[in-house]
Amino acid sequence: MARGRMLNNSISRSLKFDQLPDDTCRLLATWIISHLDFRGVFYADAIMVKSLVFTRRSDITDEQIEDTCRQWLR
Image (cartoon, rainbow, N blue to C red; front, top):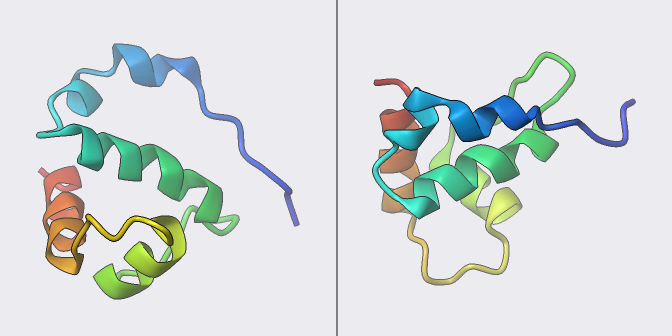
């Protein structure tokens, strides 16, 4: 299994990424990458996403995670 993934620098020029509503949304979009499986799949459950990606962030709610994931689909 791969030990890591490389984040392409084209993300800094991405219009879609730039149009995400806030920095929490952008942060989750980048931090979740290291948790994806080899097919790019991760849990579709906000509680699992928060507990695995934002383990130590008590200021982010499950509802924020759900909203963030919906923003990615727009």
